[in-house]
Image (cartoon, rainbow, N blue to C red; front, side, top):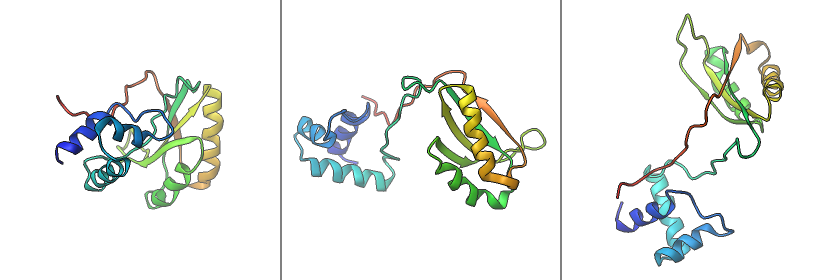
Length: 157
């Protein structure tokens, strides 16, 4: 990572500008071309310096105040098949495998569900249960109790 890469990160670490062509605006502010900004960010992404570039919605501001992590006990051999199917549902923001911790924690598949009410979350979780069918050996919903600040890479001044 060189000085130009660090300038790009410093200019974007608080988020990309909310304009139709954000890379063009960043480029203009830094005296670079948009292609150079995009190429450098792509290179940093592939090198692992930037993990991902994605929108991070503020669910509460959008009216989604009941957020529940659904946790599922499914056969270990089926997680690689079922996880992506669950993650593809339009109301699941992310889905992933986690280790079990028996006997108290039998769950190995997690899926975050957002809703405007707990009832809505429960309806959506019922859709997941239907999708999983007999592979669903049990599940719970763990509701969020606070909003955690989401931030990306931060360079120290």
